[in-house]
Image (cartoon, rainbow, N blue to C red):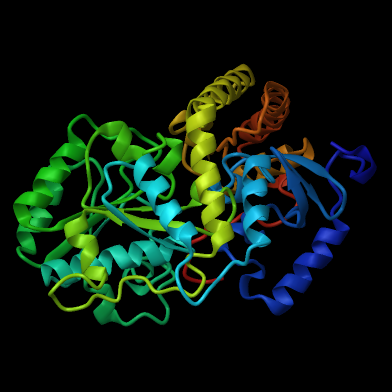
Length: 447
């Protein structure tokens, strides 16, 4: 923590970031290009605007350095400006990035991806996850001739497109008729899913879910979904935006041994560069191509979807994961961090209130009030104290660039934050420690 940029309480002073946030809001709706990066997700006047990053650290425009978690919303899993990725990108930049016909890099990237994720038979690249998941849904509807989409109700995000956003509190602008075509099923409950498929017999085109999130799938659950999808004639889609590479190089499907019909990858795939992928069974994927006899499906057609430098980044990421055992390192780092945070919280008497959850490679934390209920106010208090210690942590999702010293410093800062948390719990009121409005949930009806 840079003490030249702190006030007498030890908290960062962010005058330049505050001014930049005002400029952002004046020109960009929401003040950011992802709602999860909005300044409403951070304590008031403590939303740093980033200057640059290297490895596991970022610097804000006020000159403060932070250990960063959840890097790029889980996209920068190797750390910022990773040498192997940057070298691969630079090689392609000198050769041109976009042409009127496919580049040979597209062949090489597809071959590399399918070798890394052998449960898939074909792949098509895009720039963001929403395009890939929507393409999967469209393909499922075309293949089955059915209108309804069944999404897992316990998973927070699938796409910016109407079929999903219409199910959230931010559904303004989406016709009710569209919303009616999306139905939900609970994670881990095969009986409820079967009841849904029976109720909408021959209407559900696909089941789409994250194969795992903050909890491991119950024994036999994913295999049970596979059997249900087969029996009811719908397409099984795994959203592997997060689980891809963090669970294994081949995603959750590679770890758990259950093969979906279609799957979508992104985030870690490009280590911060824009690339996503729709992959799956050849019999389905070919419907988005030219070599079949059925009606054509407008699957994915993106001017920038196959930019050579992004595909080069993806290939470098996959090579690095396999050759350097990155997934195993993410788990090791996460286990060390989780153990330290839990010990620090327990030592300060708040072990039942600051709760670390999730797979070691994808840790999140819950902030609970005196009644052990989720609390945005207590989250605000906790985030303020982490920021004061130079830890930028909307989650505890690790990157492989972290080292033991980073983890140890984080645990020390967490312990200091827990001491303040304990005071707030004893007072049954965190307000005196907030210094402003609480942070807000991303999905809400009113700003």
